[in-house]
Length: 155
Ligand code: SF4
Image 1 (tube, rainbow, N blue to C red):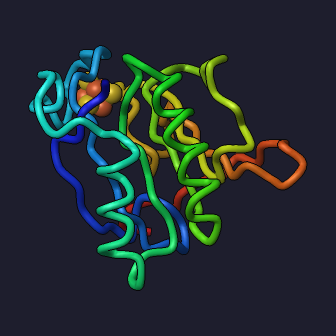
Image 2: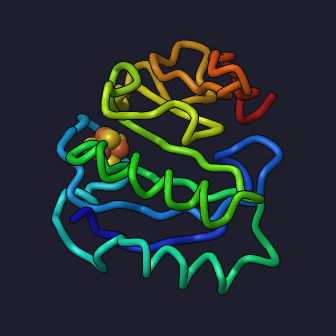
């Protein structure tokens, strides 16, 4: 079972959304220059349907989206939790930040509204860098993907 190291309400990670973001521990990617190495250990609260429901109910009035930050060690679990949120909280958008190069085959695309892929490579920078290797997609209603480019940090 994937675990939630901590969570936060964020406004920058998903365009035009107020997002309850779950930081998932046990990250297997080991990116050089990782911004969150504390997420490498398998620590935290099991991220299951009960925990998700508790947190979503608690913050429901102030959020428009939930985001799974990580979970590459078990993409099928991320997919299954996203399906649960889709069914139980249909008013919420659903996002996944993954370090895979591409969208994993265990993912049902219709369970998500936004997907970010790509490991962090320090010299290429993150999503707001012009040279980034990372990609952020909007999932359209017909299942197609539209790439979104974040504006540069100081631009
Ligand atoms: S995917 Fe994110 S948390 Fe995992 S090693 Fe890379 S930068 Fe760190």
